Length: 123
View 1: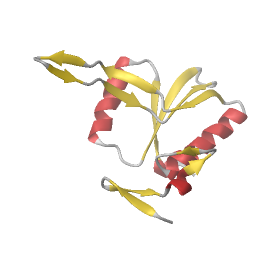
View 2: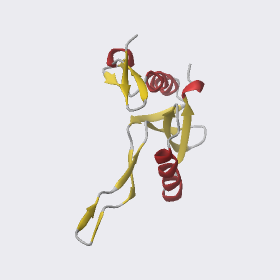
View 3: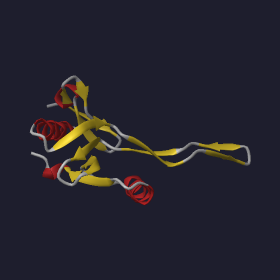
């Protein structure tokens, strides 16, 4: 098993975190994708997609300075047939301060459940 340093986190090699031709950010995210594909196959969820992007705060200019918009990008989006609602999932080993802020902004702005899946919960 090969690990690469990415910031302060160690990341597995791309070969170890690729499935269905998709390179995932982590092996945990790849495994969760497999679980969700199975749930979709048995009819518990539908419309599975990856990397849903939501605008949290628009870009703007002030005093000649341009400020970029702030987005939240989840790992997965699907429709849960039991809950009868859309779910955005984010696979997390560590909840960074930036993520915590974006989580609050997301919950405040959108009426979509944001589910945090801890890496320890994934088989």
